[in-house]
Image 1 (cartoon, helix red, strand yellow):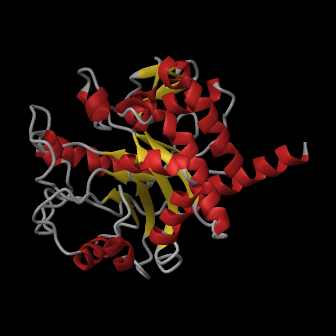
Image 2 (tube, rainbow, N blue to C red):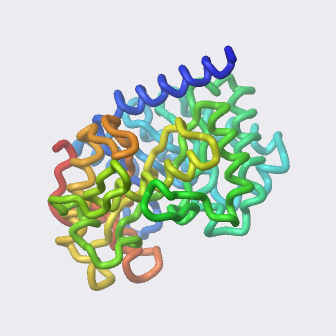
Length: 333
């Protein structure tokens, strides 16, 4: 009983910390471009635009060094191609932390390690995921950093399904792993990380996807939904509840809208979505299932990246590589 009480208090403190630190939006800093600016210019760009959080998909030491003393919070990714080795060797996990975390923390404010990205539904590495997370957690404990840096993994939103949001459940193909993963998150006070894209999920009601609906679109018992982002987030929360984990905090590690490459991937739609997203997540409105709580969110992506697959993937950036905005963005509404 005492352990459960302590765990509940820790989760409450963690949720409050997310609320307190939610005054700035985050971005995904991808590096799949041939013409991207130097890292020191990226830091200056983010600071000048009041962008307070940054996620990189793999440990880039030049970036980790450049963000030292910037005041910008950082998520560092473990690459999907690293999971097999790290899952099978504590020495490999220790080496990863010793090489990529300890030389830079605390000058660089690393808050989370995201072990893999969309592993369960986009890769064949699912069996390695929880063991790799466990070994990274042990490596942090060996470095006495387990109370400062939390370990999680970022999921595609299709790990769950269900309509309306209260019917959200995890897909059968991931449910076994998800039980172990949620137990890990609960044990260590770590957040559930989800990539939430109304762009890929909407089915005709563009206003609902762009935060432009003025009235309820989906009524779910006593919960009213005016935007698809909230519905997708709450579907993940319901799925966690269905496995007995109602209190794990949720972070949106990716969300965005492309400005080119497809019919509805327009500058106007991207501008509307991302500006309304920033306004929504910084308003502390929360979602219908978790009202009054800021949703820590990272926009995908900082730059248009010309080495990504042709089409919309090259057009998710808020900025061109020359550091000019693709369209006006209010980062501090």
